[in-house]
Structures are given as structure tokens and as C-alpha cells.
Amino acid sequence: MRTLLSLVLLALLNGPAAAQARRPLLVLSIDGLDNRYLKDADKMGLRIPTLRRLMKEGQWASEGVVGVAPTVTWPSHTSMITGVRPEEHGILSNRRPREEGGEYYWTASLLKTKTLWHAVREVGWKSAAITWPVTVDAAIDYNLPEYFQRRNGGAMDLDSIQTKSVPSNLVETISKRYPSFAHQWMDDRSRALATMAILQEYRPDLMLVHFVDLDSEQHERGPFTREAKAMLEYTDELVAGILRVMPKNYVLALVSDHGFERVDRVVNINVLLKRDNVRGTAEASGALLTTTDPAVAEYLRKRIKDPAYGIAREIPKAELQRFAPRLLKNEAVFEPVLHTQFGSATEGEAITKPGSRGSHGYWPTRENYRSVLLFWGNGIRPSWLPETEMVNIAPLLAQILGLKFSPTPLPESR
Image 1 (cartoon, one colour):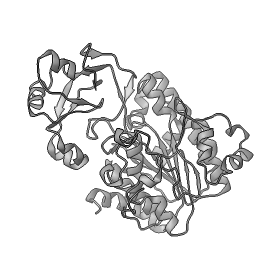
Image 2 (image 1 turned 30 degrees about the vertical axis):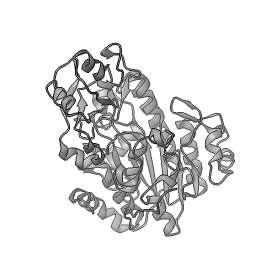
Image 3 (image 1 turned 135 degrees about the horizontal axis):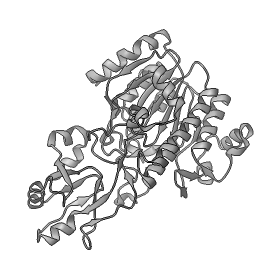
Image 4 (image 1 turned 60 degrees about the vertical axis):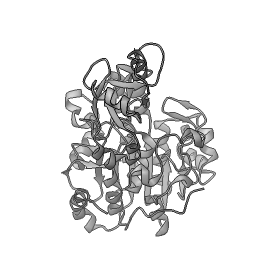
């Protein structure tokens, strides 16, 4: 069922959409693009002329997008094209649970609900995807899925991707237009070349593209750093190249999957529990701390705001029900203070240095922690969109495509 907010957003898009009932759509996701990069571009001194142009000429949710839980790549990208939360579409994290082998959610056979590419296929239109998560073996006409055996930062080995390519000669087709494409690593430059080639060669009705290098740089160096800003400025150049070849009848939807936060320290709660002779444990996942033990929960509640424990608040049951009902099995769920993560160590130091300088996965309502939504192109008139939720994006994309879409359940996965 559509929420009131999603209906408001649809109404804002309805004027241009009514004039052209069917418009091809390029969905470009810049992984880890925190909305603050756009909102505070002047303050940061960012040289992003292409993104600034999109903000000025398009429809932009200036206060950003509230994500789904967990705010990580694979569940978020799937929510954007299904319109439902992870419990419903089935992609609960980047990797599957340990009892299922712990591999990434590579294949579309793991989806529980239909996506926009299913809807496009059902009406006889064409779709394409470049390293979009959960697209191995998907019903997509031109597809270089997110699949890798080796990584180099945000780059993925092209050899692995090519084994899952649809059609099997897609790499050769792209390389005829752009000979520098077929090198070892599929980085954002390669993703941009693939996008340009497919737009020029096939003009699909729906194209999903996932850029990854900014996310990798922020994990390594931290968000809003000199290096992260430089990577975004480089990404801006790649987007400009895509726009130069994008047919004029297309709409561009610029999205991102989650915000980003700097990490300065890791608090190992179980070390503190053991030191204080508290029986029982808590489970840490970096951005969240959970416990099924009532005694541990009560102990931690008393230490909210204590700097030594790094706990910002206990997440209310109503928020758990709204964003992640699966967490209601816990006695309590806590989120950390700014620039802090929870560690899983049970021995050693209570406070340690982080393995990376930036991270995500934080609770969706965290202050200023928002992703991006922006529409630009054919029939899109300049205006502001209100803050929205990630589950409202799919109906907007369907509106532009001129499709009737609802997240219908798929047959039970293999």
C-alpha cells in the first residue's frame, strides 16, 4: 500500500509523467553518496559541476532519503527496485547467514518479490544492469552483474563478471566501442564505459548502474576527507561522460544506498561486561548492539551516554517494528554515539582502533545520515522533493517508466 508521502512524491512527478506516459530510465547509484555531499557542496568546496547541474535542473530530495535496515549495499539496492523492506524481499545483508554458507546474495533466485526488471520483462521491454547487486541469472537482457572472486578497492575482476554476462559476448560488444574497457578490473571508469556503450548500442527501457569506488575510498580514508572529495569529483566527470551520450528521451534517476560516518574508535562491550563481572553477552555488528539477556539489557540501559560504553540510545520497539521486525526477538537494541562502532572482541582492550576510517550500517533514522534521490532529464522540471524513504523509490521509478508496478511475491526461491 502506498504511503501518503509516496503519493505526494508521485503527485510532484505526475505533471511531467502525464505528458509522456513512457520514458526510458537510467538509474545510477553512487554507492555511499551521503546526501551531505550535495546539500553541503558549497561548504565543502566541491568541484562537481555535473552534479550541481542535476541539482539545479532536476527534482532533488534535498533533505535526503531514510534508508532501510540494515543500511548496507545489497539490501538497500534491492529495496530501491522492489519498494519493500529486506524482510519482504529476502536480501537481509550483503552476505547470507553463516548457516547458509556466508556467500554474497549473488543470484536473483534468492529474491522473494518482483523487481522493476521483472515488470519491464512482463511488458516486453528491454532492461540492462552494470554491477547491480543480486542480478546473477536475473531476467535482464544486457547484464554484467555484481559478481567477483577478487576485489581491488571498489573494482571487481572482469574475468568473474564475464562468466555471468548476458549475452555472453557483451564484453566484446562494449570493447568494440571502447577498447580500453576490457582490462583486468571493473572500476567506475569501466562501469561508465559499459553504461555508455549499452545506451548507444541497445537503448534499454530500464538500465541499472552501480558505481562503487566512492564507497571503497570512504571505508579506506573516511567520509568527507580530501580523498573522498577527490573521488566524488572524479565520479562527477564520469557522470558527465554518461550524460553526453544518454539519449534525450531518457530520465536519469541518481540514487545512493546509504550515508556514511567517520569511525574513530571501537568499543568492545563484551570486554566491559566481563570486566564488570556481568554474566551474559551482547552481540555487536559495528553499528548496532543487541542482547537477548534481560540482565545485560538492563545493565547497558544504565550506561547510555557513558563515554566508556559509547551507547547513544536504546532503539524503541516502535522503530524496530517499522524498520526491522526481525530484531524484536532481542531484549534490547542499542546504537552507538557518533564516530563509534561496537566491536565483538571478548578479550583484550575495551577500546580499540577501527579497521577502517569510515563505515555505514547505522540505524536509518540517525541524524544527518541520509542517502540521495534526484531525477533529471526528459520532462523533469526543477523542484524540491521532500525527505522520503527508500521504499518509496520504486513507485517513482515505475511512474517514470509508465509501468504499473507492485511488489508481487515471486515463487519460492531455490
